[in-house]
Image (cartoon, rainbow, N blue to C red; front, side, top):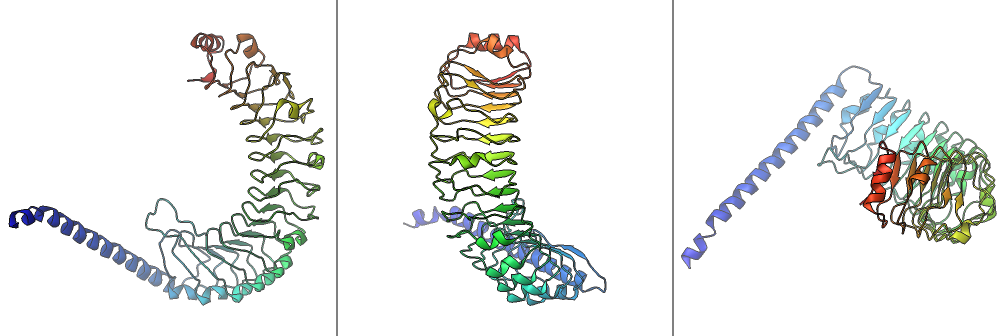
Length: 407
């Protein structure tokens, strides 16, 4: 029995040694943090005025009290730390214009835990000069009513928090130009934002509402609604929209009014349940259209009158055979048709085509004559098709500079 027990002594010794090393490393790191904190306190305590201060990625769990002396600060960067609350003196920085409290830790600092601020005091309204406020990736459940006093605020970032409602006072931030509320828990569309006359960029992706606002500010240029359960596209949105993201919204149908956004340049409708499209696209300057991962068939495309300025068209992961062909605009540069049911190439993109993705279809050939129609083509994806090596070699020989992706 004694011999069996002693056989474990080397292993126990190694475990003890590993424990001692880990303990010493932990003490060393804590000592480094203490030195950092002491160094910050000493530096901030000096009689000098600091207007811009970056304490990012320091794994700070608290801010040094000596920071309170720097009340003339205009920019303060605290992203990538381990803060759960803000010291009261932060609200005394009346000249503060830029405050960054981003919670997500930086990957290069493994020990950084990321800020997880749960509450902001009503004293936040004292920062009346604030123009930029970044609280992405924190743990906020509500915003203070004193937001109404932030009359100069232009950019507000609240991505990935736990917000279920917004204060009505937010509508008094009349200078807001950009708001990011994506990845929160909003069950109702935040109507307060529709009363902001200068709002240009609004991100409400991945929330929980199913209905949109009946009215929109004419200033709005970018609108992201990805991941909300909208089911059916409603009445027209803001008339001057340039970018609209309705991807992954469980859309089963879209009204013809969608095609009545004359300023739209980029439209995302991928990852929905669409089996029909608008009959006419009245979008004279639309350049990018994303329709991947839907239920579109040849009958859905029909005799589509595609936007003439279209440069990118993504139709991947649908049920297209293109048996009747596909006529597209002369300015198209990128066409993605991967993961469909195409057996023979009958489409007619214009001569400006740079990338053609036909991967994972049922094509057994792609001729040199087809290739000749696209003198600028640089990338041709044919992998996942039953095309012979001989055919691929002919294409490569005809266009040596062409990158052909194949199995």
